[in-house]
Length: 414
Image 1 (tube, one colour):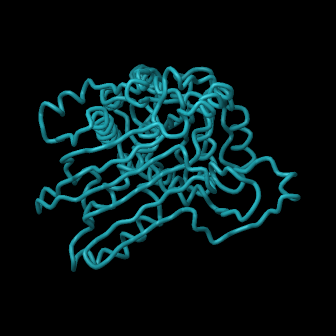
Image 2: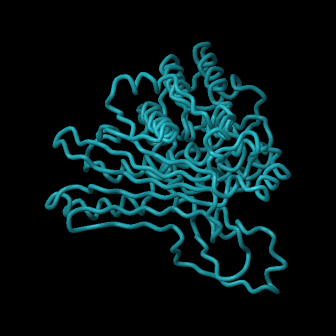
């Protein structure tokens, strides 16, 4: 079978995590990396783990001429300009076939739609990377419960939580660059997985129709003077002036267009979970059955005492976003697979090699951006937003949240 030659633009945290996942993916190799911070280290990792012999390129156009698909793992604020360069290169004759974009597709609805338009203009296959929809724990549970759903009816309530102690990089904390705070960063995951769990078997990812959105955002930890100083000292981000929310919770209501049934996806996300590390928690309730996933429950546990812990500096060896290197630690032997990264890459590779879009394409990514922005608007207005109202849908096309404009202090501080 043919091998898909991949190029990475971005060599930071998510690119490294995806490279780890690639060790478990067939029919692909990393052949190109854009010349930026971390590129050499990523290339060394790829070579030492037999992922390919990547060449580091100084321009996007060069990359487009030396790989089959490009994956955008660069910061959110760079996506549009890079996609424009990709489009220009393909129109000029570059043989690129597809493009992958890590969540979010855009910081606003307008940006997400622009990404779709550029991909269409270049005739590119697309894959929107939303790893949680590819988690085997979720999809195996859904598969096992399909007979119960056929007999009793589908799930009516899904609840999803993603929490950790905060991002790795300064631009992630800056709402004007990232596009918001934890709702933009992780709410896109939680809203998408809730809808996925509620979707009946055999239906498309956008089958359920959005009906309404309610949301509350808050700054609970990182707005306190002590922690504002931490952000300023470590990242140069000033939360006295341009804060972003570190907590968000809400409910998205969807309608089954075939039955008229309304279902609810409840989501909660925070950057203030100072426990073992990253936690993904999802559950769903149906008539007579239920499911639950908690990624902090691991088959492997280790214990490190105080004396032994003095020699260990990297807490994240055990778990992403881990905040401790001693005590009883949950350790995941295969985090990349646990979170769905291996499956999402395999889906993109298989789909592109077969000449089709991935299970989740850019249009799907644009709708998730739309739902996230609806959540921001609902939180700003402190209302339940009617997503069937044509006026609301029109407003969201040009909407940019106050938080993403750097005006978060107006709504996050008393």
